[in-house]
Length: 148
Image 1 (tube, rainbow, N blue to C red):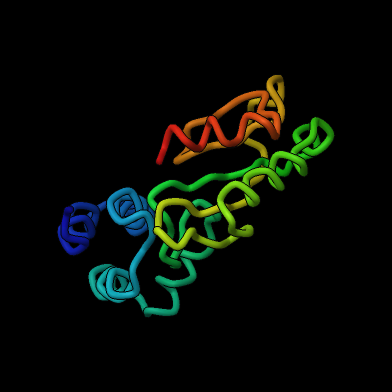
Image 2: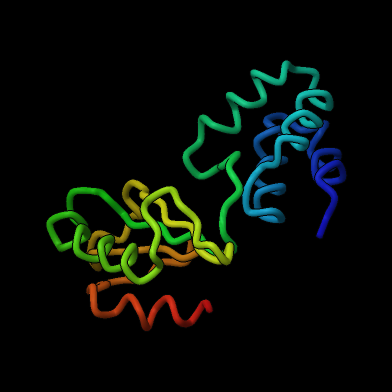
């Protein structure tokens, strides 16, 4: 696993580098640890509060520890009409956690997201940003078992 200091240093002299650094850290750790926020603030010459503001502004970024697999349910209108509520209920039941929670084994975190841009194949979920189309509640155990 790459050191977050190295990931920050690799982006330090770029315009918008803090966002790129946070993306790199999250790709490595699946979230942005508090120590990495502090180091980014120092490296980019901004306050910790501002670094935290950047990290929490974008819904894709997280400062909370998350599971290895991030399961996101699209909650846009087309997915909602196509049955997203039932799919989300199946995901929560199968994993035994609610939205914003992580399974006890640290493998899965369930989140909601806005449109994934695949409205022709609703409802859509993503697992670590990989879309799964036309999901039905009965498909959930099979889909998630691929990640266990």
